[in-house]
Length: 49
Image 1 (cartoon, one colour):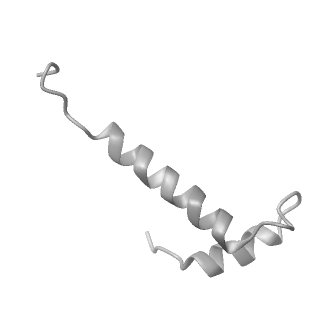
Image 2 (cartoon, helix red, strand yellow; image 1 turned 135 degrees about the vertical axis):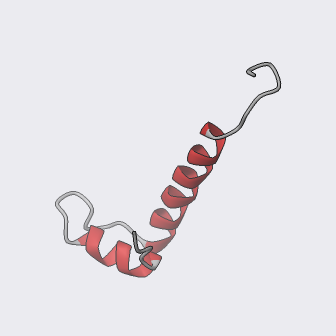
């Protein structure tokens, strides 16, 4: 899977209904939250062996 630059993702989102006003900072924050959530799911806790 190829990772697209945030600017390109933002431009593609703007073409979708309901996302015309989205900006690059909003996309960056959403991607960061998504990445952090994925990282948390892969954490192994000491109590769960």
